[in-house]
View (cartoon, rainbow, N blue to C red):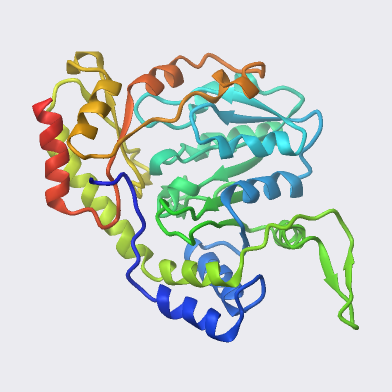
Length: 370
């Protein structure tokens, strides 16, 4: 089986984790928690970084530190993983679903303003499959209506966006807060884990406090809690793995980009296949290689998935529309025709960092034969 996306373990993971085991620093204290935060914020070029247990908790923290809660609305795409949306309800707010672009699969900024009301407090752009949301016009909207931007940059780690002033900024560092997941299939992994980044020192400090049960250690080592916090701490042993992964991130990004180049070259002339579009002002990390199976391909997307499975190739359909799922079907939304179309036609192909060129050839040959 050619897997969809599995982690690459090739650096200091064993060495750093063994040190945690040898020294008994396996829980939430230990040097690797601080090191991972420090090195990650340096890589991402952000002033603050806070490790969490997963990406969901990072988004939850972001909403909480920004004061978003009961009676507030947050605009978010319906085409995303559910973790982008669930935290909105965790804090008592309501999601408002916006459509995506046909050729990039990310939030359609032209459809955001019509959904803004006096209840709107934030927007969560999701850099889906490594494709960047067009952030400059989104920032203009946020400033016009005094809204927060929380980037779900999980799938965009390593992608970059060129601002109007010519400066390239990494995904997650453009809005007020950026959030990441380090699940096993992500560009870098800690097995399970996440990160919140921000340039606002006060927000960063508050997030760190809330993530560790809002715990204050007094002079006699007693614990005092000055707020209602969460147990969102990342254990030292996971941070050790994250640090080792981060040391190889540029190599991983280069591999993903090369995989995408080969895929593009082999698939671009097949009738009935639409490849994603890269904006002029973005550099994509190509976390998952994505394309759309059009009506004139000859088989449906789901028929293709079954044929690929018969050839021992793992694929995955695009995320299904959240606004059609039972817990969310009654929330406000715009016209989501593109989201619903892509949900029926979009497919992700094998995209592991360690994917071999001959495996890409096999995937593409099977598609050509079909």
